[in-house]
Length: 87
Image (cartoon, rainbow, N blue to C red; front, side, top):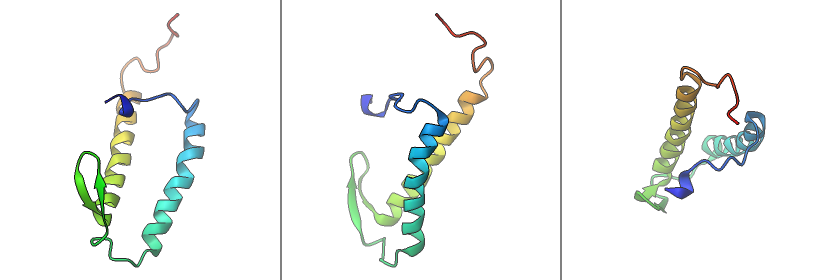
């Protein structure tokens, strides 16, 4: 879907990391300190329906891993990056 297409909002990998790393740190802090029963906290996902807090965390980690795998696939593609910038 259009909302899931890359927008190019980060000009560089470093800019992406500057945005992503603090968010990741917040999630990890939550995971390490949360004492609430996350299997009882339920919130709707727009495509998957209701998910527990535990399911959301599993989905979040899988989502990040999928993007990392996609990036590795692009980087490993023969001819990437192109030797010449198209005009």
